[in-house]
Length: 412
Image 1: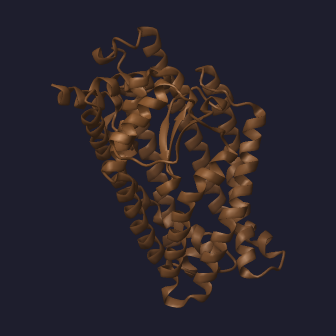
Image 2: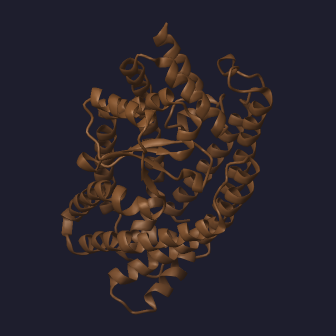
Image 3: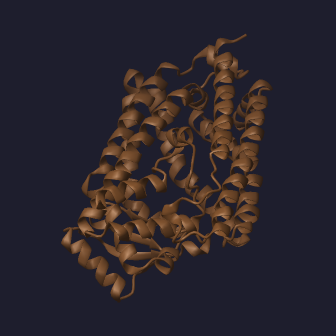
Protein backbone atom coordinates (compact mmCIF):
# COMPACT_ATOMS: atom_id res chain seq x y z
CA UNK A 1 0.00 0.00 0.00
CA UNK A 2 1.11 3.58 -0.64
CA UNK A 3 3.36 4.78 2.18
CA UNK A 4 1.91 8.28 2.18
CA UNK A 5 -1.60 6.86 2.49
CA UNK A 6 -0.58 4.65 5.43
CA UNK A 7 0.99 7.64 7.17
CA UNK A 8 -2.04 9.88 6.61
CA UNK A 9 -4.52 7.24 7.78
CA UNK A 10 -2.35 6.55 10.84
CA UNK A 11 -2.25 10.25 11.71
CA UNK A 12 -6.03 10.56 11.36
CA UNK A 13 -6.62 7.45 13.49
CA UNK A 14 -4.14 8.41 16.22
CA UNK A 15 -5.54 11.94 16.39
CA UNK A 16 -9.06 10.54 16.68
CA UNK A 17 -8.11 8.12 19.46
CA UNK A 18 -6.11 10.74 21.35
CA UNK A 19 -8.87 13.33 21.19
CA UNK A 20 -11.46 10.79 22.30
CA UNK A 21 -9.34 9.50 25.18
CA UNK A 22 -8.57 13.02 26.43
CA UNK A 23 -12.25 13.99 26.22
CA UNK A 24 -13.23 10.96 28.31
CA UNK A 25 -10.53 11.76 30.86
CA UNK A 26 -11.89 15.29 31.02
CA UNK A 27 -15.37 13.95 31.76
CA UNK A 28 -14.01 11.71 34.52
CA UNK A 29 -12.30 14.71 36.14
CA UNK A 30 -15.61 16.50 36.72
CA UNK A 31 -15.89 16.90 40.48
CA UNK A 32 -19.40 17.31 41.95
CA UNK A 33 -17.91 19.14 44.95
CA UNK A 34 -17.97 22.88 44.45
CA UNK A 35 -14.49 24.44 44.90
CA UNK A 36 -14.46 26.64 47.99
CA UNK A 37 -13.15 29.58 45.95
CA UNK A 38 -16.49 29.70 44.12
CA UNK A 39 -18.81 29.23 47.08
CA UNK A 40 -19.70 32.94 47.01
CA UNK A 41 -20.88 32.98 43.37
CA UNK A 42 -21.92 29.42 42.44
CA UNK A 43 -24.87 27.70 44.08
CA UNK A 44 -24.96 23.91 43.84
CA UNK A 45 -27.68 23.94 41.17
CA UNK A 46 -25.77 26.33 38.90
CA UNK A 47 -22.56 24.37 39.43
CA UNK A 48 -24.31 21.13 38.46
CA UNK A 49 -25.58 22.89 35.34
CA UNK A 50 -22.03 23.92 34.38
CA UNK A 51 -20.91 20.29 34.66
CA UNK A 52 -23.87 19.11 32.60
CA UNK A 53 -22.94 21.69 29.95
CA UNK A 54 -19.43 20.21 29.83
CA UNK A 55 -20.83 16.68 29.52
CA UNK A 56 -23.26 17.57 26.74
CA UNK A 57 -20.77 19.58 24.68
CA UNK A 58 -18.06 16.94 25.14
CA UNK A 59 -20.26 14.04 24.00
CA UNK A 60 -21.51 16.11 21.10
CA UNK A 61 -17.93 16.92 20.14
CA UNK A 62 -17.04 13.22 20.25
CA UNK A 63 -19.99 12.40 17.99
CA UNK A 64 -19.04 15.15 15.54
CA UNK A 65 -15.39 14.08 15.51
CA UNK A 66 -16.37 10.45 14.89
CA UNK A 67 -18.64 11.24 11.95
CA UNK A 68 -16.26 13.75 10.37
CA UNK A 69 -13.32 11.34 10.73
CA UNK A 70 -15.27 8.56 9.02
CA UNK A 71 -16.36 10.89 6.22
CA UNK A 72 -12.80 12.14 5.72
CA UNK A 73 -11.34 8.61 5.49
CA UNK A 74 -14.05 7.49 3.07
CA UNK A 75 -13.57 10.62 0.97
CA UNK A 76 -9.85 9.82 0.67
CA UNK A 77 -10.22 6.10 0.01
CA UNK A 78 -12.97 6.43 -2.60
CA UNK A 79 -11.29 9.16 -4.63
CA UNK A 80 -13.38 12.12 -3.54
CA UNK A 81 -10.53 14.55 -4.17
CA UNK A 82 -10.07 13.23 -7.69
CA UNK A 83 -13.77 13.65 -8.41
CA UNK A 84 -13.62 17.28 -7.25
CA UNK A 85 -10.53 17.81 -9.38
CA UNK A 86 -12.32 16.44 -12.45
CA UNK A 87 -15.22 18.82 -11.86
CA UNK A 88 -12.83 21.77 -11.49
CA UNK A 89 -10.92 20.81 -14.64
CA UNK A 90 -14.11 20.36 -16.67
CA UNK A 91 -14.43 24.16 -17.01
CA UNK A 92 -11.10 24.27 -18.93
CA UNK A 93 -9.73 27.34 -17.13
CA UNK A 94 -6.04 27.91 -16.47
CA UNK A 95 -4.38 26.21 -13.49
CA UNK A 96 -4.88 29.10 -11.08
CA UNK A 97 -8.61 29.50 -11.69
CA UNK A 98 -8.99 25.71 -11.66
CA UNK A 99 -7.20 25.69 -8.30
CA UNK A 100 -9.58 28.30 -6.94
CA UNK A 101 -12.57 26.24 -8.08
CA UNK A 102 -11.07 23.05 -6.61
CA UNK A 103 -10.39 24.69 -3.24
CA UNK A 104 -13.77 26.45 -3.20
CA UNK A 105 -15.65 23.20 -3.86
CA UNK A 106 -13.74 21.44 -1.06
CA UNK A 107 -14.56 24.26 1.36
CA UNK A 108 -18.24 24.14 0.38
CA UNK A 109 -18.38 20.36 0.85
CA UNK A 110 -16.61 20.59 4.21
CA UNK A 111 -18.92 23.40 5.30
CA UNK A 112 -22.00 21.48 4.22
CA UNK A 113 -20.83 18.41 6.19
CA UNK A 114 -20.31 20.52 9.31
CA UNK A 115 -23.48 22.61 8.94
CA UNK A 116 -25.86 20.20 10.74
CA UNK A 117 -23.51 20.12 13.74
CA UNK A 118 -23.32 23.91 13.81
CA UNK A 119 -27.11 24.18 13.65
CA UNK A 120 -27.63 21.63 16.44
CA UNK A 121 -24.95 23.21 18.63
CA UNK A 122 -26.39 26.70 18.22
CA UNK A 123 -30.13 26.08 18.26
CA UNK A 124 -30.34 23.03 20.52
CA UNK A 125 -27.40 22.81 22.94
CA UNK A 126 -26.72 26.53 23.38
CA UNK A 127 -30.47 27.16 23.51
CA UNK A 128 -30.96 24.48 26.17
CA UNK A 129 -28.40 26.13 28.47
CA UNK A 130 -29.68 29.66 27.90
CA UNK A 131 -26.79 30.95 25.80
CA UNK A 132 -28.23 31.22 22.30
CA UNK A 133 -29.56 34.55 21.06
CA UNK A 134 -28.86 33.88 17.39
CA UNK A 135 -31.85 34.05 15.09
CA UNK A 136 -32.09 32.01 11.89
CA UNK A 137 -31.71 35.23 9.92
CA UNK A 138 -28.47 36.11 11.70
CA UNK A 139 -27.19 32.55 11.34
CA UNK A 140 -27.81 32.48 7.57
CA UNK A 141 -26.44 35.99 7.04
CA UNK A 142 -23.26 35.08 8.95
CA UNK A 143 -22.69 32.15 6.60
CA UNK A 144 -23.37 34.28 3.51
CA UNK A 145 -21.02 37.04 4.70
CA UNK A 146 -18.29 34.51 5.49
CA UNK A 147 -18.54 33.02 2.00
CA UNK A 148 -18.37 36.46 0.38
CA UNK A 149 -15.33 37.44 2.48
CA UNK A 150 -13.63 34.13 1.63
CA UNK A 151 -14.13 34.86 -2.06
CA UNK A 152 -13.08 38.52 -1.91
CA UNK A 153 -10.12 38.11 0.48
CA UNK A 154 -9.11 34.46 0.48
CA UNK A 155 -9.50 34.03 -3.27
CA UNK A 156 -6.92 36.63 -4.35
CA UNK A 157 -4.50 35.52 -1.63
CA UNK A 158 -4.70 31.89 -2.74
CA UNK A 159 -4.28 32.99 -6.37
CA UNK A 160 -1.03 34.79 -5.46
CA UNK A 161 0.25 31.71 -3.61
CA UNK A 162 -0.54 29.44 -6.56
CA UNK A 163 1.05 31.86 -9.03
CA UNK A 164 4.27 32.16 -7.00
CA UNK A 165 4.61 28.39 -6.61
CA UNK A 166 4.05 27.89 -10.33
CA UNK A 167 6.41 30.63 -11.53
CA UNK A 168 8.71 31.56 -8.64
CA UNK A 169 11.24 28.75 -8.89
CA UNK A 170 13.22 27.56 -5.84
CA UNK A 171 12.45 30.71 -3.84
CA UNK A 172 8.68 30.54 -4.42
CA UNK A 173 8.11 29.51 -0.78
CA UNK A 174 9.89 32.70 0.36
CA UNK A 175 7.76 34.93 -1.90
CA UNK A 176 4.58 33.23 -0.66
CA UNK A 177 5.67 33.68 2.94
CA UNK A 178 6.35 37.40 2.47
CA UNK A 179 3.02 37.96 0.70
CA UNK A 180 1.00 36.12 3.34
CA UNK A 181 2.80 37.90 6.20
CA UNK A 182 2.18 41.29 4.59
CA UNK A 183 -1.45 40.40 4.01
CA UNK A 184 -1.86 39.26 7.63
CA UNK A 185 -0.39 42.48 9.04
CA UNK A 186 -2.52 44.69 6.77
CA UNK A 187 -5.59 42.71 7.79
CA UNK A 188 -4.88 43.51 11.45
CA UNK A 189 -5.40 47.18 10.61
CA UNK A 190 -8.40 46.71 8.33
CA UNK A 191 -10.37 44.12 10.32
CA UNK A 192 -11.60 46.48 13.07
CA UNK A 193 -12.92 49.07 10.61
CA UNK A 194 -13.98 47.02 7.57
CA UNK A 195 -14.60 43.36 8.46
CA UNK A 196 -15.75 43.10 12.08
CA UNK A 197 -18.55 45.68 11.63
CA UNK A 198 -20.06 43.39 9.00
CA UNK A 199 -20.94 40.92 11.76
CA UNK A 200 -21.46 43.10 14.82
CA UNK A 201 -22.45 46.62 15.73
CA UNK A 202 -19.80 48.65 17.56
CA UNK A 203 -20.97 51.59 19.65
CA UNK A 204 -18.84 54.15 21.44
CA UNK A 205 -19.18 53.69 25.18
CA UNK A 206 -21.47 56.37 26.55
CA UNK A 207 -20.24 58.97 29.02
CA UNK A 208 -20.40 57.96 32.63
CA UNK A 209 -18.56 56.33 35.51
CA UNK A 210 -17.38 53.32 33.48
CA UNK A 211 -15.93 55.33 30.60
CA UNK A 212 -14.23 57.73 32.97
CA UNK A 213 -12.69 54.90 34.99
CA UNK A 214 -11.41 53.22 31.83
CA UNK A 215 -10.06 56.50 30.46
CA UNK A 216 -8.29 57.28 33.74
CA UNK A 217 -6.67 53.84 33.79
CA UNK A 218 -5.61 54.07 30.12
CA UNK A 219 -4.07 57.49 30.71
CA UNK A 220 -2.21 56.21 33.76
CA UNK A 221 -0.82 53.40 31.60
CA UNK A 222 0.01 55.86 28.78
CA UNK A 223 -2.09 53.78 26.40
CA UNK A 224 -3.24 55.51 23.22
CA UNK A 225 -6.40 54.20 21.64
CA UNK A 226 -8.96 54.97 18.95
CA UNK A 227 -11.85 54.64 21.36
CA UNK A 228 -13.77 52.50 23.83
CA UNK A 229 -16.56 50.47 22.26
CA UNK A 230 -19.28 48.05 23.21
CA UNK A 231 -20.16 45.23 20.81
CA UNK A 232 -23.58 43.65 20.52
CA UNK A 233 -22.41 40.20 21.58
CA UNK A 234 -25.91 39.59 22.95
CA UNK A 235 -27.02 39.39 19.30
CA UNK A 236 -25.67 35.82 19.27
CA UNK A 237 -24.97 34.70 22.83
CA UNK A 238 -25.23 35.62 26.51
CA UNK A 239 -21.56 34.76 27.08
CA UNK A 240 -19.13 37.48 28.20
CA UNK A 241 -15.90 38.69 26.60
CA UNK A 242 -13.62 41.68 26.01
CA UNK A 243 -10.62 42.31 23.75
CA UNK A 244 -8.22 44.77 22.14
CA UNK A 245 -8.25 45.00 18.37
CA UNK A 246 -6.15 46.82 15.80
CA UNK A 247 -2.73 48.46 16.03
CA UNK A 248 -1.45 52.00 16.32
CA UNK A 249 -4.10 54.67 15.92
CA UNK A 250 -6.60 51.99 14.89
CA UNK A 251 -6.32 50.29 18.30
CA UNK A 252 -9.57 50.12 20.22
CA UNK A 253 -10.95 48.55 23.37
CA UNK A 254 -14.07 46.43 22.88
CA UNK A 255 -16.41 45.05 25.55
CA UNK A 256 -19.31 42.73 24.87
CA UNK A 257 -22.53 44.42 25.94
CA UNK A 258 -23.21 41.32 28.06
CA UNK A 259 -19.98 41.95 29.99
CA UNK A 260 -20.88 45.58 30.66
CA UNK A 261 -24.24 44.40 31.94
CA UNK A 262 -22.93 41.67 34.27
CA UNK A 263 -19.70 43.11 35.73
CA UNK A 264 -19.15 46.09 38.02
CA UNK A 265 -17.07 49.09 36.94
CA UNK A 266 -14.06 47.98 38.99
CA UNK A 267 -14.28 44.44 37.62
CA UNK A 268 -14.42 45.74 34.03
CA UNK A 269 -11.36 47.91 34.65
CA UNK A 270 -9.60 44.83 36.06
CA UNK A 271 -10.48 42.88 32.88
CA UNK A 272 -9.11 45.79 30.85
CA UNK A 273 -5.96 45.77 33.00
CA UNK A 274 -5.48 42.10 32.13
CA UNK A 275 -5.67 42.93 28.41
CA UNK A 276 -3.30 45.83 29.08
CA UNK A 277 -0.89 43.32 30.58
CA UNK A 278 -0.81 41.43 27.28
CA UNK A 279 -0.03 44.69 25.48
CA UNK A 280 2.61 45.92 27.93
CA UNK A 281 4.37 42.55 28.08
CA UNK A 282 4.31 42.43 24.26
CA UNK A 283 2.56 39.06 24.24
CA UNK A 284 0.64 39.88 21.07
CA UNK A 285 3.80 40.74 19.14
CA UNK A 286 5.70 37.75 20.51
CA UNK A 287 2.97 35.31 19.48
CA UNK A 288 2.58 37.02 16.11
CA UNK A 289 6.34 36.79 15.55
CA UNK A 290 6.30 33.09 16.44
CA UNK A 291 3.34 32.53 14.11
CA UNK A 292 5.16 34.29 11.26
CA UNK A 293 8.24 32.13 11.81
CA UNK A 294 6.11 28.98 11.92
CA UNK A 295 4.41 30.05 8.70
CA UNK A 296 7.77 30.43 6.96
CA UNK A 297 8.85 26.95 8.05
CA UNK A 298 5.54 25.55 6.83
CA UNK A 299 5.91 27.14 3.38
CA UNK A 300 9.45 25.80 3.04
CA UNK A 301 8.42 22.24 3.95
CA UNK A 302 5.44 22.58 1.60
CA UNK A 303 7.78 23.45 -1.26
CA UNK A 304 9.49 20.08 -0.80
CA UNK A 305 6.25 18.17 -1.38
CA UNK A 306 4.85 20.07 -4.38
CA UNK A 307 3.72 17.80 -7.22
CA UNK A 308 4.83 14.68 -5.34
CA UNK A 309 3.50 11.76 -7.41
CA UNK A 310 3.49 9.33 -4.48
CA UNK A 311 1.40 11.75 -2.44
CA UNK A 312 -1.05 12.20 -5.30
CA UNK A 313 -1.32 8.44 -5.74
CA UNK A 314 -2.37 8.20 -2.07
CA UNK A 315 -5.38 10.37 -2.89
CA UNK A 316 -6.22 8.45 -6.12
CA UNK A 317 -5.55 11.53 -8.25
CA UNK A 318 -5.34 11.36 -12.04
CA UNK A 319 -3.48 14.66 -12.36
CA UNK A 320 -0.66 16.32 -10.42
CA UNK A 321 -1.11 20.02 -9.59
CA UNK A 322 0.18 22.74 -7.31
CA UNK A 323 -3.26 23.58 -5.95
CA UNK A 324 -4.00 20.01 -4.84
CA UNK A 325 -0.49 19.81 -3.33
CA UNK A 326 -1.49 22.56 -0.88
CA UNK A 327 -4.47 20.54 0.34
CA UNK A 328 -2.66 17.20 0.57
CA UNK A 329 0.29 18.75 2.37
CA UNK A 330 -2.12 19.77 5.13
CA UNK A 331 -2.60 16.09 5.99
CA UNK A 332 1.16 15.53 6.20
CA UNK A 333 1.70 18.68 8.23
CA UNK A 334 -1.01 17.97 10.80
CA UNK A 335 1.31 16.23 13.35
CA UNK A 336 3.69 19.19 13.22
CA UNK A 337 0.74 21.55 13.49
CA UNK A 338 -0.53 19.68 16.55
CA UNK A 339 2.89 19.81 18.21
CA UNK A 340 3.24 23.54 17.50
CA UNK A 341 -0.27 24.09 18.83
CA UNK A 342 0.75 22.50 22.13
CA UNK A 343 3.85 24.72 22.29
CA UNK A 344 1.83 27.86 21.47
CA UNK A 345 -0.77 26.96 24.11
CA UNK A 346 1.98 26.47 26.69
CA UNK A 347 3.34 29.98 26.15
CA UNK A 348 -0.18 31.42 25.89
CA UNK A 349 -1.02 30.04 29.34
CA UNK A 350 2.17 31.60 30.72
CA UNK A 351 1.19 34.90 29.15
CA UNK A 352 -2.21 34.73 30.86
CA UNK A 353 -0.54 34.41 34.26
CA UNK A 354 1.75 37.34 33.43
CA UNK A 355 -1.22 39.46 32.33
CA UNK A 356 -3.06 38.60 35.54
CA UNK A 357 -0.01 39.63 37.55
CA UNK A 358 0.22 42.91 35.64
CA UNK A 359 -3.47 43.61 36.20
CA UNK A 360 -3.18 42.95 39.93
CA UNK A 361 -0.15 45.22 40.22
CA UNK A 362 -1.36 48.08 38.02
CA UNK A 363 -4.79 48.35 39.66
CA UNK A 364 -3.53 47.37 43.12
CA UNK A 365 -6.83 45.48 43.48
CA UNK A 366 -6.31 41.80 42.59
CA UNK A 367 -9.67 40.91 44.13
CA UNK A 368 -11.46 42.88 41.39
CA UNK A 369 -10.02 40.62 38.70
CA UNK A 370 -10.71 37.54 40.81
CA UNK A 371 -14.36 38.49 41.27
CA UNK A 372 -14.61 39.33 37.56
CA UNK A 373 -13.19 35.92 36.59
CA UNK A 374 -15.65 34.23 38.91
CA UNK A 375 -18.60 35.98 37.30
CA UNK A 376 -17.28 35.14 33.84
CA UNK A 377 -17.05 31.49 34.86
CA UNK A 378 -20.56 31.40 36.27
CA UNK A 379 -22.13 33.13 33.29
CA UNK A 380 -20.21 31.02 30.74
CA UNK A 381 -20.73 27.76 32.70
CA UNK A 382 -16.98 27.11 32.62
CA UNK A 383 -15.53 23.75 33.61
CA UNK A 384 -13.73 24.42 36.89
CA UNK A 385 -11.93 21.05 37.08
CA UNK A 386 -10.59 20.15 33.62
CA UNK A 387 -8.20 17.20 33.33
CA UNK A 388 -4.51 18.30 33.25
CA UNK A 389 -3.88 16.46 29.97
CA UNK A 390 -6.86 18.20 28.37
CA UNK A 391 -5.46 21.53 29.57
CA UNK A 392 -1.98 20.66 28.28
CA UNK A 393 -3.20 19.76 24.81
CA UNK A 394 -6.05 22.19 24.23
CA UNK A 395 -6.16 25.14 26.64
CA UNK A 396 -4.76 28.49 25.55
CA UNK A 397 -5.77 29.87 28.98
CA UNK A 398 -5.04 28.28 32.36
CA UNK A 399 -8.05 26.86 34.21
CA UNK A 400 -9.79 29.71 35.99
CA UNK A 401 -9.29 28.07 39.39
CA UNK A 402 -5.52 28.01 38.83
CA UNK A 403 -5.55 31.67 37.84
CA UNK A 404 -7.50 32.64 40.94
CA UNK A 405 -5.21 30.66 43.23
CA UNK A 406 -2.15 32.28 41.61
CA UNK A 407 -3.57 35.77 42.26
CA UNK A 408 -4.51 34.87 45.81
CA UNK A 409 -0.88 33.92 46.36
CA UNK A 410 0.15 37.30 44.94
CA UNK A 411 -2.27 39.03 47.30
CA UNK A 412 -0.86 37.08 50.24
